[in-house]
Length: 301
Image 1 (spheres, rainbow, N blue to C red):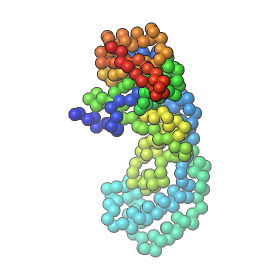
Image 2: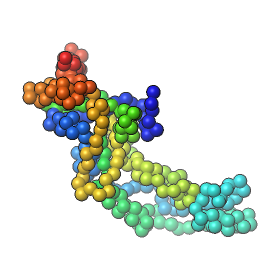
Image 3: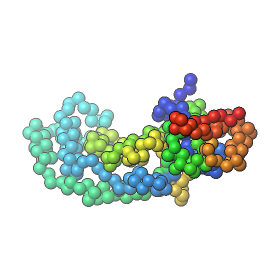
């Protein structure tokens, strides 16, 4: 079976809670909307203010210690792994006597570096870049389950909407294959680990957006854990809007679950789409099981 090289998870489909009118627009246009987090209902979703998990002195000391370690390792290939600047610098360090290395390590512990990275000009510039990126960031929010009562009330127009099942199809290289699972934690998300910053500071790795900012876009407080959310991330550099509509292959839309309070007209519209425009689309009615206190579905023939 064909597997796309872009696949990042093992799920075969996701669910999208939405109003009936939005669902109809999605099915007719075959497009889904990715939005900037500036439009989200949770003001703490995707932090606006950057935070590090270490101090400025910790970082500088770590960089110096890493450089001494690389310089003292005769098996480490400077020319293959470092930038030209770091190659010259470490080549110079390798000419040191042993006691010079000890002096450098001692200096790392003696330097009085401000702990508040927020006051460092480079960090202020990084914060501004992140602020500028937020309007261009695009996120598609998806769910693992289609029978969550809170989600139905909040995101599917209080049961007057629907839930769409959208398949992750390898053969069409669907962008849903790139979805990332949301991390739920009450710890404030930070930008990268100190190990990543040390590797970048010593030139061993290039700047990587995901390593620094990636977790900010998939971290939410534990009070939202009931959503069991996944996200597809993208960017739109040239858009003046805070959202963008992305095309999906028609075969991606496989099921529509109709809310218990959907109008007769909307229900008929989805049946019509399944009969004519989307022949692979199955339509399901919602059933409320009062005995087991569960939401269930029955396919409409």
